[in-house]
Image (tube, rainbow over all chains, first blue to last red; front, side, top):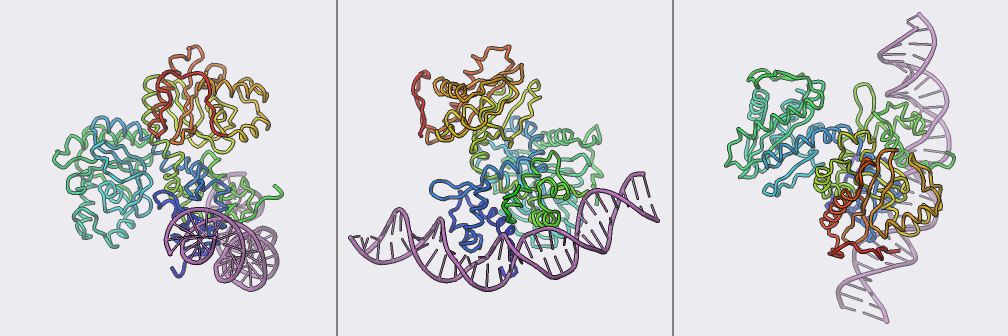
Amino acid sequence: MTNERRSVLHRALRILETIKNAKDGLCLSDISRRSGVPLTTAHRIVGELHDWGALERDDVGVYRVGLRLWEVASVTPRSVGLQRVALPFMQDLFETTHRGVHLAIREKDQVVFVERFLSQETATDRTLPGMRYELHATAIGLILLAYAPLDLQNEVLTGPLAVPDWHPPVTEREVRQKLADIRRLGYATTPVRQEYISVAAPIYGPASTVVAALSVILPNTESYGPRLAHLQGTTRGISRALGAPQKRTGYAGSSDMRKDG
Amino acid sequence: MTNERRSVLHRALRILETIKNAKDGLCLSDISRRSGVPLTTAHRIVGELHDWGALERDDVGVYRVGLRLWEVASVTPRSVGLQRVALPFMQDLFETTHRGVHLAIREKDQVVFVERFLSQETATDRTLPGMRYELHATAIGLILLAYAPLDLQNEVLTGPLAVPDWHPPVTEREVRQKLADIRRLGYATTPVRQEYISVAAPIYGPASTVVAALSVILPNTESYGPRLAHLQGTTRGISRALGAPQKRTGYAGSSDMRKDG
DNA sequence: CCGCGCTTTCCGTATACCGGAAGGCCGGAT
DNA sequence: ATCCGGCCTTCCGGTATACGGAAAGCGCGG
Protein backbone atom coordinates (compact mmCIF):
# COMPACT_ATOMS: atom_id res chain seq x y z
CA MET A 1 0.00 0.00 0.00
CA THR A 2 2.87 2.33 0.77
CA ASN A 3 4.93 2.43 -2.35
CA GLU A 4 2.06 2.40 -4.81
CA ARG A 5 2.72 3.87 -8.15
CA ARG A 6 1.00 7.18 -8.53
CA SER A 7 0.46 7.89 -12.19
CA VAL A 8 -2.91 8.61 -13.70
CA LEU A 9 -2.49 5.74 -16.04
CA HIS A 10 -1.68 3.29 -13.33
CA ARG A 11 -4.70 4.36 -11.39
CA ALA A 12 -6.91 4.16 -14.43
CA LEU A 13 -5.78 0.63 -15.05
CA ARG A 14 -6.36 -0.27 -11.44
CA ILE A 15 -9.87 1.09 -11.76
CA LEU A 16 -10.51 -1.09 -14.77
CA GLU A 17 -9.25 -4.08 -12.86
CA THR A 18 -11.50 -3.20 -9.94
CA ILE A 19 -14.53 -3.05 -12.16
CA LYS A 20 -13.60 -6.30 -13.79
CA ASN A 21 -13.51 -8.02 -10.43
CA ALA A 22 -16.93 -6.76 -9.45
CA LYS A 23 -19.77 -9.10 -10.28
CA ASP A 24 -22.07 -6.59 -11.73
CA GLY A 25 -20.63 -3.12 -12.08
CA LEU A 26 -19.82 -0.49 -9.49
CA CYS A 27 -20.93 3.01 -8.68
CA LEU A 28 -18.37 5.77 -8.39
CA SER A 29 -17.93 5.59 -4.63
CA ASP A 30 -17.48 1.84 -4.75
CA ILE A 31 -14.86 2.24 -7.40
CA SER A 32 -13.08 4.74 -5.22
CA ARG A 33 -13.27 2.58 -2.11
CA ARG A 34 -12.28 -0.69 -3.70
CA SER A 35 -9.50 0.69 -5.83
CA GLY A 36 -8.14 2.96 -3.13
CA VAL A 37 -8.20 5.95 -5.47
CA PRO A 38 -9.53 9.09 -3.73
CA LEU A 39 -13.08 9.91 -4.70
CA THR A 40 -12.41 13.15 -6.52
CA THR A 41 -9.60 11.60 -8.48
CA ALA A 42 -11.66 8.56 -9.31
CA HIS A 43 -14.40 10.87 -10.47
CA ARG A 44 -12.07 12.55 -12.90
CA ILE A 45 -10.52 9.36 -14.22
CA VAL A 46 -13.76 7.45 -14.51
CA GLY A 47 -15.25 10.42 -16.31
CA GLU A 48 -12.49 10.35 -18.86
CA LEU A 49 -12.75 6.60 -19.34
CA HIS A 50 -16.46 6.97 -19.78
CA ASP A 51 -16.16 9.75 -22.34
CA TRP A 52 -13.91 7.56 -24.39
CA GLY A 53 -16.13 4.53 -24.11
CA ALA A 54 -13.90 2.33 -21.98
CA LEU A 55 -16.66 2.39 -19.38
CA GLU A 56 -20.42 2.58 -19.65
CA ARG A 57 -22.75 4.05 -17.13
CA ASP A 58 -26.33 2.96 -16.71
CA ASP A 59 -29.20 5.15 -15.60
CA VAL A 60 -28.59 4.53 -11.91
CA GLY A 61 -24.93 5.46 -12.13
CA VAL A 62 -23.39 2.00 -12.17
CA TYR A 63 -20.29 1.67 -14.31
CA ARG A 64 -19.44 -1.39 -16.36
CA VAL A 65 -16.82 -2.22 -18.94
CA GLY A 66 -17.60 -0.44 -22.17
CA LEU A 67 -17.86 -1.64 -25.71
CA ARG A 68 -14.94 0.41 -26.90
CA LEU A 69 -12.57 -1.47 -24.65
CA TRP A 70 -14.02 -4.74 -25.82
CA GLU A 71 -13.38 -3.69 -29.39
CA VAL A 72 -9.74 -3.12 -28.66
CA ALA A 73 -9.50 -6.45 -26.87
CA SER A 74 -11.18 -8.19 -29.77
CA VAL A 75 -7.86 -8.24 -31.59
CA THR A 76 -5.82 -9.75 -28.75
CA PRO A 77 -3.80 -12.38 -30.56
CA ARG A 78 -3.04 -14.80 -27.73
CA SER A 79 -6.64 -15.23 -26.64
CA VAL A 80 -8.95 -14.33 -29.49
CA GLY A 81 -6.75 -15.80 -32.19
CA LEU A 82 -6.50 -19.06 -30.33
CA GLN A 83 -10.19 -19.02 -29.51
CA ARG A 84 -11.25 -18.76 -33.12
CA VAL A 85 -9.10 -21.69 -34.12
CA ALA A 86 -9.92 -23.87 -31.16
CA LEU A 87 -13.65 -23.33 -30.93
CA PRO A 88 -14.86 -25.81 -33.54
CA PHE A 89 -12.52 -28.49 -32.20
CA MET A 90 -13.72 -27.88 -28.67
CA GLN A 91 -17.24 -28.16 -29.84
CA ASP A 92 -16.64 -31.48 -31.53
CA LEU A 93 -15.01 -32.73 -28.38
CA PHE A 94 -17.91 -31.52 -26.33
CA GLU A 95 -20.44 -33.17 -28.57
CA THR A 96 -18.51 -36.42 -28.49
CA THR A 97 -18.02 -36.54 -24.75
CA HIS A 98 -20.74 -34.34 -23.28
CA ARG A 99 -18.26 -33.30 -20.62
CA GLY A 100 -17.11 -29.82 -19.67
CA VAL A 101 -14.25 -28.63 -21.88
CA HIS A 102 -11.85 -25.81 -20.98
CA LEU A 103 -9.20 -23.95 -22.91
CA ALA A 104 -6.51 -21.95 -21.12
CA ILE A 105 -3.16 -20.27 -21.65
CA ARG A 106 -0.35 -19.23 -19.37
CA GLU A 107 0.27 -15.59 -18.50
CA LYS A 108 3.36 -15.11 -16.38
CA ASP A 109 2.91 -17.39 -13.38
CA GLN A 110 -0.82 -17.87 -13.71
CA VAL A 111 -3.29 -19.68 -15.90
CA VAL A 112 -5.95 -17.69 -17.75
CA PHE A 113 -9.06 -19.41 -19.04
CA VAL A 114 -9.96 -18.45 -22.56
CA GLU A 115 -12.97 -20.51 -23.59
CA ARG A 116 -15.23 -23.25 -22.32
CA PHE A 117 -18.08 -25.56 -23.14
CA LEU A 118 -20.18 -26.91 -20.33
CA SER A 119 -22.60 -29.75 -20.05
CA GLN A 120 -25.72 -29.28 -17.99
CA GLU A 121 -24.36 -31.56 -15.27
CA THR A 122 -20.98 -29.89 -15.00
CA ALA A 123 -22.64 -26.49 -15.06
CA THR A 124 -21.80 -25.90 -11.40
CA ASP A 125 -18.40 -24.92 -12.74
CA ARG A 126 -17.71 -21.30 -11.95
CA THR A 127 -14.76 -20.87 -14.26
CA LEU A 128 -15.40 -18.26 -16.92
CA PRO A 129 -13.24 -16.96 -19.74
CA GLY A 130 -10.98 -14.25 -18.40
CA MET A 131 -10.41 -15.82 -15.00
CA ARG A 132 -7.02 -16.49 -13.44
CA TYR A 133 -5.77 -19.23 -11.15
CA GLU A 134 -2.46 -20.43 -9.79
CA LEU A 135 -0.60 -22.71 -12.15
CA HIS A 136 -0.28 -25.64 -9.76
CA ALA A 137 -3.93 -25.72 -8.80
CA THR A 138 -5.50 -27.41 -11.83
CA ALA A 139 -4.65 -30.07 -14.39
CA ILE A 140 -4.72 -27.49 -17.12
CA GLY A 141 -2.38 -25.26 -15.14
CA LEU A 142 0.00 -28.12 -14.43
CA ILE A 143 0.28 -28.79 -18.14
CA LEU A 144 1.21 -25.20 -18.75
CA LEU A 145 3.67 -25.25 -15.88
CA ALA A 146 5.25 -28.49 -17.04
CA TYR A 147 6.14 -26.97 -20.40
CA ALA A 148 7.02 -23.50 -19.12
CA PRO A 149 10.59 -22.17 -19.06
CA LEU A 150 12.65 -23.68 -16.26
CA ASP A 151 13.26 -20.47 -14.37
CA LEU A 152 9.54 -19.86 -14.18
CA GLN A 153 8.98 -23.40 -12.96
CA ASN A 154 11.53 -22.85 -10.24
CA GLU A 155 10.05 -19.54 -9.27
CA VAL A 156 6.60 -21.05 -8.91
CA LEU A 157 7.76 -24.21 -7.18
CA THR A 158 9.87 -22.44 -4.59
CA GLY A 159 7.11 -19.95 -3.91
CA PRO A 160 4.16 -20.69 -1.64
CA LEU A 161 2.08 -23.54 -3.06
CA ALA A 162 -1.36 -22.65 -1.82
CA VAL A 163 -3.50 -25.70 -1.19
CA PRO A 164 -6.51 -25.69 -3.49
CA ASP A 165 -9.85 -27.23 -2.65
CA TRP A 166 -8.64 -30.64 -3.67
CA HIS A 167 -5.94 -32.55 -1.84
CA PRO A 168 -2.13 -32.48 -2.31
CA PRO A 169 0.45 -32.66 -3.98
CA VAL A 170 1.53 -29.61 -2.10
CA THR A 171 5.25 -30.00 -1.55
CA GLU A 172 7.73 -28.82 -4.13
CA ARG A 173 9.06 -32.35 -4.46
CA GLU A 174 5.64 -33.79 -5.19
CA VAL A 175 4.80 -31.19 -7.78
CA ARG A 176 8.15 -31.69 -9.50
CA GLN A 177 7.42 -35.38 -9.70
CA LYS A 178 4.03 -34.65 -11.16
CA LEU A 179 5.51 -32.31 -13.74
CA ALA A 180 8.01 -34.96 -14.78
CA ASP A 181 5.17 -37.45 -15.20
CA ILE A 182 3.26 -34.96 -17.28
CA ARG A 183 6.18 -34.38 -19.62
CA ARG A 184 6.69 -38.11 -19.93
CA LEU A 185 3.05 -39.03 -20.54
CA GLY A 186 1.83 -35.93 -22.33
CA TYR A 187 -1.18 -35.35 -20.15
CA ALA A 188 -2.19 -34.41 -16.60
CA THR A 189 -4.99 -35.38 -14.26
CA THR A 190 -6.18 -33.88 -11.00
CA PRO A 191 -9.17 -34.48 -8.80
CA VAL A 192 -11.78 -31.72 -8.75
CA ARG A 193 -14.12 -31.15 -5.84
CA GLN A 194 -14.55 -34.71 -4.49
CA GLU A 195 -16.46 -36.15 -7.39
CA TYR A 196 -14.81 -35.06 -10.59
CA ILE A 197 -11.52 -35.47 -12.30
CA SER A 198 -9.89 -33.09 -14.74
CA VAL A 199 -7.80 -34.44 -17.61
CA ALA A 200 -5.64 -31.98 -19.55
CA ALA A 201 -3.27 -32.03 -22.52
CA PRO A 202 -0.99 -29.48 -24.20
CA ILE A 203 -1.57 -27.58 -27.45
CA TYR A 204 1.44 -26.70 -29.60
CA GLY A 205 2.06 -23.63 -31.71
CA PRO A 206 4.10 -23.11 -34.87
CA ALA A 207 7.40 -22.94 -33.00
CA SER A 208 6.55 -26.31 -31.50
CA THR A 209 6.27 -24.79 -28.05
CA VAL A 210 3.26 -25.29 -25.84
CA VAL A 211 0.95 -22.31 -26.29
CA ALA A 212 -2.19 -23.49 -24.53
CA ALA A 213 -3.85 -26.43 -22.85
CA LEU A 214 -7.19 -28.14 -23.06
CA SER A 215 -9.02 -30.06 -20.35
CA VAL A 216 -12.06 -32.25 -19.90
CA ILE A 217 -13.92 -32.65 -16.63
CA LEU A 218 -15.37 -36.10 -15.88
CA PRO A 219 -17.16 -37.72 -12.98
CA ASN A 220 -14.48 -39.78 -11.23
CA THR A 221 -16.69 -42.83 -11.43
CA GLU A 222 -15.78 -42.99 -15.09
CA SER A 223 -12.46 -44.31 -16.37
CA TYR A 224 -10.66 -41.57 -18.22
CA GLY A 225 -8.95 -43.66 -20.88
CA PRO A 226 -11.44 -43.11 -23.70
CA ARG A 227 -11.88 -39.43 -22.89
CA LEU A 228 -8.14 -38.95 -22.87
CA ALA A 229 -7.98 -40.35 -26.37
CA HIS A 230 -10.65 -37.90 -27.53
CA LEU A 231 -8.88 -35.09 -25.74
CA GLN A 232 -5.56 -35.84 -27.34
CA GLY A 233 -7.15 -36.15 -30.74
CA THR A 234 -8.55 -32.68 -30.22
CA THR A 235 -5.34 -31.08 -28.99
CA ARG A 236 -3.53 -32.63 -31.93
CA GLY A 237 -6.10 -31.14 -34.27
CA ILE A 238 -5.84 -27.69 -32.75
CA SER A 239 -2.06 -27.82 -32.77
CA ARG A 240 -2.10 -28.72 -36.43
CA ALA A 241 -4.55 -25.92 -37.17
CA LEU A 242 -2.21 -23.53 -35.38
CA GLY A 243 0.61 -24.62 -37.63
CA ALA A 244 2.50 -26.86 -35.26
CA PRO A 245 4.92 -29.17 -37.04
CA GLN A 246 3.65 -32.74 -37.15
CA LYS A 247 5.50 -35.02 -34.84
CA ARG A 248 5.41 -38.77 -34.58
CA THR A 249 2.73 -39.68 -37.07
CA GLY A 250 2.16 -43.08 -35.45
CA TYR A 251 1.08 -43.79 -31.92
CA ALA A 252 1.87 -41.45 -29.10
CA GLY A 253 5.02 -43.13 -27.82
CA SER A 254 6.23 -42.94 -24.27
CA SER A 255 9.57 -41.25 -24.18
CA ASP A 256 11.10 -37.84 -24.73
CA MET A 257 8.59 -35.01 -24.83
CA ARG A 258 10.90 -32.35 -23.51
CA LYS A 259 10.63 -28.81 -24.70
CA ASP A 260 13.12 -26.02 -24.83
CA GLY A 261 14.73 -24.72 -21.63
CA MET B 1 -5.45 18.00 -34.73
CA THR B 2 -5.30 21.40 -33.10
CA ASN B 3 -7.47 21.24 -30.07
CA GLU B 4 -6.64 17.67 -29.07
CA ARG B 5 -7.06 16.75 -25.51
CA ARG B 6 -3.76 16.44 -23.73
CA SER B 7 -4.12 14.10 -20.80
CA VAL B 8 -2.02 11.00 -20.33
CA LEU B 9 -5.12 8.93 -20.19
CA HIS B 10 -6.51 10.26 -23.40
CA ARG B 11 -3.24 9.63 -25.14
CA ALA B 12 -2.99 6.14 -23.70
CA LEU B 13 -6.45 5.32 -25.01
CA ARG B 14 -5.58 6.74 -28.37
CA ILE B 15 -2.54 4.51 -28.45
CA LEU B 16 -4.66 1.48 -27.72
CA GLU B 17 -6.99 2.46 -30.53
CA THR B 18 -4.03 2.90 -32.86
CA ILE B 19 -2.75 -0.55 -32.09
CA LYS B 20 -6.18 -2.01 -32.54
CA ASN B 21 -6.42 -0.57 -36.02
CA ALA B 22 -3.07 -1.99 -37.07
CA LYS B 23 -3.27 -5.34 -38.76
CA ASP B 24 -0.51 -6.99 -36.89
CA GLY B 25 0.99 -4.92 -34.12
CA LEU B 26 3.21 -1.86 -34.20
CA CYS B 27 6.67 -0.92 -33.05
CA LEU B 28 7.15 2.08 -30.82
CA SER B 29 7.96 4.57 -33.56
CA ASP B 30 4.94 3.49 -35.57
CA ILE B 31 2.75 3.94 -32.55
CA SER B 32 4.14 7.42 -32.09
CA ARG B 33 3.72 8.36 -35.73
CA ARG B 34 0.23 6.95 -36.21
CA SER B 35 -1.18 8.19 -32.93
CA GLY B 36 0.48 11.57 -33.13
CA VAL B 37 1.90 11.21 -29.65
CA PRO B 38 5.54 12.41 -29.48
CA LEU B 39 8.00 9.58 -29.39
CA THR B 40 9.35 10.10 -25.91
CA THR B 41 5.89 10.42 -24.48
CA ALA B 42 4.71 7.35 -26.35
CA HIS B 43 7.69 5.51 -24.99
CA ARG B 44 6.71 6.32 -21.45
CA ILE B 45 3.03 5.52 -21.88
CA VAL B 46 3.56 2.34 -23.85
CA GLY B 47 6.05 1.24 -21.22
CA GLU B 48 3.49 1.69 -18.51
CA LEU B 49 0.80 -0.12 -20.49
CA HIS B 50 3.22 -2.92 -21.12
CA ASP B 51 4.23 -3.23 -17.47
CA TRP B 52 0.63 -3.61 -16.54
CA GLY B 53 -0.11 -6.14 -19.26
CA ALA B 54 -2.39 -4.05 -21.44
CA LEU B 55 0.17 -4.45 -24.19
CA GLU B 56 2.54 -7.25 -25.05
CA ARG B 57 5.83 -6.92 -26.79
CA ASP B 58 7.42 -9.63 -28.87
CA ASP B 59 11.11 -10.26 -29.29
CA VAL B 60 11.46 -7.83 -32.19
CA GLY B 61 9.79 -4.99 -30.33
CA VAL B 62 6.34 -5.12 -31.87
CA TYR B 63 3.51 -4.28 -29.51
CA ARG B 64 0.13 -5.99 -29.54
CA VAL B 65 -2.91 -5.95 -27.31
CA GLY B 66 -2.15 -7.81 -24.10
CA LEU B 67 -3.99 -10.53 -22.30
CA ARG B 68 -4.67 -8.41 -19.27
CA LEU B 69 -6.78 -6.03 -21.29
CA TRP B 70 -8.65 -8.91 -22.83
CA GLU B 71 -9.41 -10.21 -19.37
CA VAL B 72 -11.01 -6.94 -18.43
CA ALA B 73 -12.98 -6.89 -21.64
CA SER B 74 -14.13 -10.45 -21.07
CA VAL B 75 -16.79 -9.13 -18.71
CA THR B 76 -18.23 -6.53 -21.06
CA PRO B 77 -21.95 -7.05 -20.65
CA ARG B 78 -23.26 -5.68 -23.93
CA SER B 79 -21.00 -7.77 -26.12
CA VAL B 80 -19.84 -10.82 -24.20
CA GLY B 81 -23.10 -11.34 -22.37
CA LEU B 82 -25.04 -11.19 -25.59
CA GLN B 83 -22.50 -13.36 -27.34
CA ARG B 84 -22.82 -16.18 -24.85
CA VAL B 85 -26.57 -16.23 -25.15
CA ALA B 86 -26.73 -15.86 -28.90
CA LEU B 87 -23.97 -18.21 -29.94
CA PRO B 88 -25.87 -21.50 -29.83
CA PHE B 89 -28.81 -19.95 -31.68
CA MET B 90 -26.53 -18.53 -34.31
CA GLN B 91 -24.95 -21.87 -34.71
CA ASP B 92 -28.25 -23.61 -35.24
CA LEU B 93 -29.16 -21.02 -37.80
CA PHE B 94 -25.85 -21.47 -39.51
CA GLU B 95 -26.25 -25.20 -39.64
CA THR B 96 -29.75 -24.92 -41.01
CA THR B 97 -28.95 -22.39 -43.69
CA HIS B 98 -25.21 -22.71 -44.36
CA ARG B 99 -25.12 -18.98 -44.95
CA GLY B 100 -22.99 -16.36 -43.23
CA VAL B 101 -24.58 -15.18 -39.98
CA HIS B 102 -23.71 -11.91 -38.22
CA LEU B 103 -24.60 -10.48 -34.83
CA ALA B 104 -24.21 -6.76 -34.13
CA ILE B 105 -25.21 -4.04 -31.70
CA ARG B 106 -25.43 -0.29 -31.88
CA GLU B 107 -22.89 1.94 -30.17
CA LYS B 108 -23.77 5.61 -30.47
CA ASP B 109 -24.19 6.25 -34.19
CA GLN B 110 -22.37 3.19 -35.41
CA VAL B 111 -22.86 -0.53 -35.63
CA VAL B 112 -20.39 -2.86 -33.95
CA PHE B 113 -20.15 -6.47 -35.00
CA VAL B 114 -20.02 -8.88 -32.11
CA GLU B 115 -20.01 -12.41 -33.51
CA ARG B 116 -20.23 -14.25 -36.77
CA PHE B 117 -20.42 -17.62 -38.44
CA LEU B 118 -19.22 -17.97 -41.98
CA SER B 119 -19.73 -20.58 -44.62
CA GLN B 120 -16.81 -21.46 -46.84
CA GLU B 121 -18.43 -19.69 -49.78
CA THR B 122 -19.17 -16.48 -47.93
CA ALA B 123 -15.70 -16.51 -46.40
CA THR B 124 -14.64 -13.54 -48.49
CA ASP B 125 -16.45 -11.52 -45.85
CA ARG B 126 -13.98 -9.25 -44.08
CA THR B 127 -16.20 -8.31 -41.19
CA LEU B 128 -14.75 -9.42 -37.87
CA PRO B 129 -16.05 -9.08 -34.34
CA GLY B 130 -15.03 -5.70 -32.99
CA MET B 131 -15.42 -3.82 -36.26
CA ARG B 132 -17.49 -0.69 -36.76
CA TYR B 133 -19.51 0.62 -39.66
CA GLU B 134 -21.97 3.39 -40.33
CA LEU B 135 -25.51 2.56 -39.35
CA HIS B 136 -27.07 3.17 -42.75
CA ALA B 137 -24.57 1.08 -44.66
CA THR B 138 -25.84 -2.43 -43.93
CA ALA B 139 -29.11 -4.25 -43.35
CA ILE B 140 -28.07 -5.03 -39.80
CA GLY B 141 -27.24 -1.38 -39.21
CA LEU B 142 -30.55 -0.21 -40.68
CA ILE B 143 -32.38 -2.44 -38.24
CA LEU B 144 -30.54 -0.87 -35.34
CA LEU B 145 -31.16 2.58 -36.73
CA ALA B 146 -34.85 1.92 -37.28
CA TYR B 147 -35.35 1.12 -33.61
CA ALA B 148 -32.95 3.73 -32.24
CA PRO B 149 -34.13 6.83 -30.35
CA LEU B 150 -35.60 9.43 -32.67
CA ASP B 151 -33.04 12.12 -31.97
CA LEU B 152 -30.27 9.75 -32.95
CA GLN B 153 -32.11 8.83 -36.12
CA ASN B 154 -32.39 12.47 -37.00
CA GLU B 155 -28.79 13.13 -36.24
CA VAL B 156 -27.68 10.30 -38.49
CA LEU B 157 -30.14 11.06 -41.27
CA THR B 158 -29.29 14.73 -41.48
CA GLY B 159 -25.57 14.00 -41.39
CA PRO B 160 -23.59 12.92 -44.44
CA LEU B 161 -24.85 9.58 -45.75
CA ALA B 162 -21.71 8.14 -47.23
CA VAL B 163 -22.40 5.87 -50.16
CA PRO B 164 -21.29 2.34 -49.43
CA ASP B 165 -20.12 -0.17 -52.01
CA TRP B 166 -23.70 -1.07 -52.82
CA HIS B 167 -26.14 1.27 -54.52
CA PRO B 168 -28.52 3.81 -52.92
CA PRO B 169 -30.74 4.67 -50.97
CA VAL B 170 -28.58 7.61 -50.20
CA THR B 171 -30.95 10.51 -49.67
CA GLU B 172 -32.44 11.21 -46.28
CA ARG B 173 -35.91 10.75 -47.72
CA GLU B 174 -35.13 7.33 -49.10
CA VAL B 175 -33.56 6.11 -45.90
CA ARG B 176 -36.51 7.36 -43.87
CA GLN B 177 -38.81 5.43 -46.15
CA LYS B 178 -36.69 2.36 -45.70
CA LEU B 179 -36.71 2.72 -41.92
CA ALA B 180 -40.49 2.98 -41.91
CA ASP B 181 -40.71 -0.19 -43.99
CA ILE B 182 -38.40 -1.94 -41.58
CA ARG B 183 -40.51 -0.99 -38.57
CA ARG B 184 -43.62 -2.11 -40.39
CA LEU B 185 -42.26 -5.43 -41.63
CA GLY B 186 -39.84 -6.28 -38.85
CA TYR B 187 -36.88 -6.99 -41.11
CA ALA B 188 -34.46 -5.32 -43.49
CA THR B 189 -32.70 -6.29 -46.69
CA THR B 190 -29.84 -4.71 -48.57
CA PRO B 191 -27.76 -5.82 -51.52
CA VAL B 192 -24.15 -6.68 -50.76
CA ARG B 193 -21.36 -6.49 -53.33
CA GLN B 194 -23.25 -7.24 -56.57
CA GLU B 195 -24.05 -10.86 -55.87
CA TYR B 196 -25.31 -11.16 -52.32
CA ILE B 197 -28.17 -9.92 -50.25
CA SER B 198 -28.21 -9.35 -46.53
CA VAL B 199 -31.38 -9.98 -44.54
CA ALA B 200 -31.54 -8.70 -40.96
CA ALA B 201 -33.96 -8.75 -38.03
CA PRO B 202 -34.03 -7.20 -34.54
CA ILE B 203 -33.34 -8.87 -31.19
CA TYR B 204 -35.22 -7.64 -28.14
CA GLY B 205 -34.03 -7.37 -24.54
CA PRO B 206 -35.92 -7.58 -21.24
CA ALA B 207 -37.20 -4.01 -21.48
CA SER B 208 -38.65 -4.92 -24.86
CA THR B 209 -36.25 -2.56 -26.58
CA VAL B 210 -34.10 -3.61 -29.49
CA VAL B 211 -30.66 -4.51 -28.14
CA ALA B 212 -29.05 -6.18 -31.14
CA ALA B 213 -29.64 -7.41 -34.66
CA LEU B 214 -28.91 -10.56 -36.57
CA SER B 215 -28.32 -10.97 -40.28
CA VAL B 216 -27.91 -13.67 -42.88
CA ILE B 217 -26.02 -13.23 -46.13
CA LEU B 218 -27.40 -15.04 -49.18
CA PRO B 219 -26.56 -15.20 -52.86
CA ASN B 220 -29.12 -12.95 -54.52
CA THR B 221 -30.01 -15.74 -56.90
CA GLU B 222 -31.89 -17.29 -54.01
CA SER B 223 -35.27 -16.10 -52.78
CA TYR B 224 -35.00 -14.92 -49.23
CA GLY B 225 -38.40 -16.01 -47.97
CA PRO B 226 -37.40 -19.28 -46.32
CA ARG B 227 -34.20 -17.83 -44.87
CA LEU B 228 -36.14 -14.93 -43.41
CA ALA B 229 -38.36 -17.40 -41.59
CA HIS B 230 -35.33 -19.14 -40.14
CA LEU B 231 -33.77 -15.82 -39.22
CA GLN B 232 -36.86 -14.61 -37.42
CA GLY B 233 -37.21 -17.88 -35.60
CA THR B 234 -33.66 -17.39 -34.37
CA THR B 235 -34.08 -13.78 -33.32
CA ARG B 236 -37.23 -14.72 -31.47
CA GLY B 237 -35.34 -17.47 -29.67
CA ILE B 238 -32.50 -15.16 -28.68
CA SER B 239 -34.92 -12.47 -27.55
CA ARG B 240 -36.71 -14.99 -25.38
CA ALA B 241 -33.41 -16.22 -23.94
CA LEU B 242 -32.55 -12.62 -23.12
CA GLY B 243 -35.78 -12.29 -21.20
CA ALA B 244 -37.79 -10.28 -23.68
CA PRO B 245 -41.51 -10.36 -22.98
CA GLN B 246 -43.41 -12.52 -25.45
CA LYS B 247 -45.41 -10.50 -27.83
CA ARG B 248 -48.04 -11.51 -30.29
CA THR B 249 -47.95 -15.28 -30.08
CA GLY B 250 -49.60 -15.62 -33.48
CA TYR B 251 -48.45 -14.15 -36.77
CA ALA B 252 -46.37 -11.06 -37.03
CA GLY B 253 -49.04 -8.45 -37.58
CA SER B 254 -48.55 -5.38 -39.68
CA SER B 255 -49.07 -2.24 -37.68
CA ASP B 256 -47.53 -0.23 -34.87
CA MET B 257 -44.08 -1.37 -33.90
CA ARG B 258 -42.81 1.91 -32.55
CA LYS B 259 -40.42 2.04 -29.68
CA ASP B 260 -39.87 4.71 -27.06
CA GLY B 261 -38.86 8.25 -28.06
C1' DC C 1 33.47 2.22 -41.87
C1' DC C 2 29.55 5.13 -41.91
C1' DG C 3 24.62 6.26 -41.84
C1' DC C 4 20.02 5.36 -40.80
C1' DG C 5 16.14 4.19 -37.97
C1' DC C 6 14.73 2.64 -33.74
C1' DT C 7 14.96 2.75 -28.77
C1' DT C 8 16.29 4.48 -24.41
C1' DT C 9 18.05 7.77 -20.89
C1' DC C 10 18.53 12.45 -19.19
C1' DC C 11 16.72 16.59 -17.29
C1' DG C 12 14.82 21.41 -16.73
C1' DT C 13 10.26 23.18 -17.40
C1' DA C 14 5.34 23.86 -16.84
C1' DT C 15 1.15 22.09 -16.74
C1' DA C 16 -1.98 18.60 -15.96
C1' DC C 17 -3.22 16.30 -11.98
C1' DC C 18 -4.29 16.18 -7.22
C1' DG C 19 -7.64 15.85 -3.52
C1' DG C 20 -9.68 18.42 0.60
C1' DA C 21 -13.51 21.27 1.30
C1' DA C 22 -17.99 22.50 0.35
C1' DG C 23 -22.50 22.41 -1.99
C1' DG C 24 -26.41 19.91 -4.15
C1' DC C 25 -29.30 15.98 -4.71
C1' DC C 26 -32.03 12.09 -3.49
C1' DG C 27 -34.29 8.64 -0.55
C1' DG C 28 -35.21 6.67 3.87
C1' DA C 29 -35.89 7.19 8.70
C1' DT C 30 -37.90 9.87 12.54
C1' DA D 1 -42.25 18.04 7.48
C1' DT D 2 -37.46 17.60 8.91
C1' DC D 3 -33.26 15.53 9.42
C1' DC D 4 -29.63 12.50 8.13
C1' DG D 5 -26.42 9.85 5.41
C1' DG D 6 -24.63 8.48 1.10
C1' DC D 7 -23.53 9.76 -3.45
C1' DC D 8 -22.09 12.81 -7.05
C1' DT D 9 -20.23 17.08 -8.60
C1' DT D 10 -17.72 21.59 -8.73
C1' DC D 11 -14.04 24.56 -7.18
C1' DC D 12 -9.32 25.82 -6.68
C1' DG D 13 -4.37 26.61 -5.10
C1' DG D 14 -0.05 23.88 -4.67
C1' DT D 15 2.82 20.61 -6.40
C1' DA D 16 3.92 16.25 -7.99
C1' DT D 17 3.80 14.42 -12.45
C1' DA D 18 4.10 14.35 -17.07
C1' DC D 19 6.31 16.48 -20.93
C1' DG D 20 9.33 16.23 -24.95
C1' DG D 21 13.77 18.09 -27.10
C1' DA D 22 18.45 16.73 -27.11
C1' DA D 23 21.63 13.31 -27.27
C1' DA D 24 23.49 8.91 -26.43
C1' DG D 25 23.18 3.55 -27.38
C1' DC D 26 22.14 -0.05 -30.62
C1' DG D 27 21.84 -2.98 -34.54
C1' DC D 28 21.66 -3.49 -39.38
C1' DG D 29 22.73 -2.91 -44.22
C1' DG D 30 25.44 -0.77 -47.58
